[in-house]
Amino acid sequence: MSHHLALLVPDLRVGGAQRVMLYLAGRFAAAGHRVDVLAFHDGPLVAEVPDSVRWVPLKTAGGVQSVRHLARWLDAERPAALLSSVTGANLVAVAARALCRHRPHLVLREAVTLANVRSPLRLAAMRLLYPRADAVVALSPVMATEIQKRLGVARERIHYLPNPVDAARLAQQAREPLDHPFAAEADRLLVTAGRLIPQKDHATLLEAFARIDPRLGARLAILGDGPERSRLEARAAALGITANVCFAGFEANPWRWIRRARGFVLSSRWEGHPNALIEALALGRPAVCTGYDASAECLGSDGRVRVVPVADPKALAEAMVALLKTPPSPPTLAPPGDDSVSGYLHLLCTARPLPTRSP
Image (cartoon, rainbow, N blue to C red; front, side, top):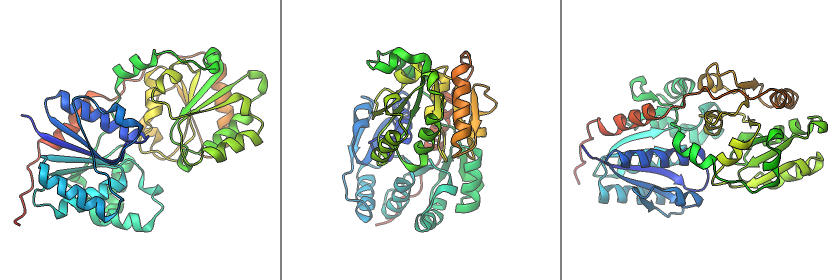
């Protein structure tokens, strides 16, 4: 049976959550559903909206206006279900549905661990609104427990679904050519990918990279952009490593870098689910990862990942050196794919719709 499904994200700039939602949208459409992707702001990822999916820009100034615009769209289009991702969009989705006469089934996908929600006001809003959703998706068991205990969401409404990985797309795009001097030094190249924001802790990564013996000839490519870029570039210059570090900016195809690299590095202080790391492992790259709360659950016992303490440049440097000196191992990870997609479709398509409100 075909359903009209709507997927909401705050924007289509750059982010792992947005890419996951676009992948899900394409898979839902391939399963025969009518699918719309909604966002309050556009961005480079608009180009990645699948042809089988309708792109709906809800351009607003934010706040109450976003709630009203979404509520009007829901009443006009009457989707059977709405899947929302990223905290701000999730809060808007719950508030908008409360204003609607047509009340679609609402599933929230939470992309961050609550321990790292710094705003008391935002946390209070989550406590008020998240329990009103029909289901909340957690990306790890740690997150599921947090959502239950700290937000008061009933356990039966919380569902653990790890992010799916589009393995076919990774393999195809990873084979595309890379025109950069570092590509010729792949055996010494380390890569990281993610927005340049404090959460990713690129500052510690730079400190660690500066500790590596120059005789190893290591290179570091940082894929991504964000508000921290100028500060990080200045720090790289102060550390004297500019010649060996590339700030590549937004990269529509990070997988061609990752496939050629000697290894992948994730220096984050926290992650909901480390998409880029899981994709690097799916491409057969060994990795270094910080040991934030959910990392053990996401990675299991994968022996290709060296886990180091968060914000420890010495330990991170030692792990990167060990990676550079160790022969690569073959890929062994089976990335989550169809099971996660099926889980989302089950949540969106099998629940009974809420009754329509009287005018």
